[in-house]
Image (cartoon, rainbow, N blue to C red; front, side, top):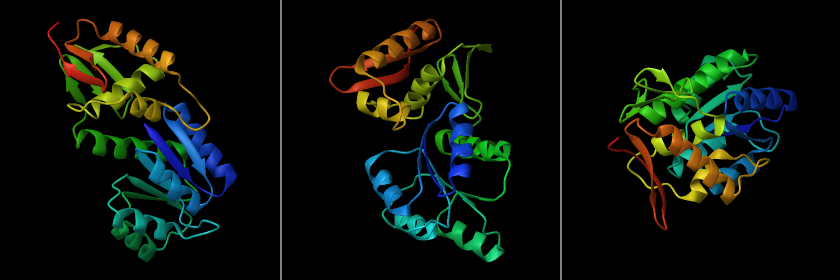
Length: 223
């Protein structure tokens, strides 16, 4: 999952970004609302962590503009503003969750998992393709109850493909989902990761199919 953290406190942004990276997500971080608006237009994020008190704008205004233009990216607000009126107004603007500073990183990552589960699997505890079971929140995969050993990048591929099931996912979209601004993935690196994932999925009733000229599709297969 690719996450954008918009927070002007460098210490908080660094701690949050590190925790989410440790959890296996690709994380970008910005301190200004204007930069965040450009990033959200240019990149397909799976989650936005948004501070309300930004140096150049109010985070609530950014949230309002996102929803007015039809952007449905899940938004977790992280802010020091703890008044009931502020929380209610922000949720009514379209925020999906609201976390008051200071907060424990364990609670933050738990809320991120809940938002991810709600968006990607429509409330279901896991996605099932063939005999492959994918726990998005726990970032685990299994076949017939036996854990499938995947690297962080391999799970990222499964996640990107499974949450877009029945749609062809382009190579560019896969690379976008797997990489933050300070990491890169070459075409050759993507090919290697897909090859390794295919080998691990053999015999589980799920396969990564190449749609020539378009991209890849994760689908149930006959094994």
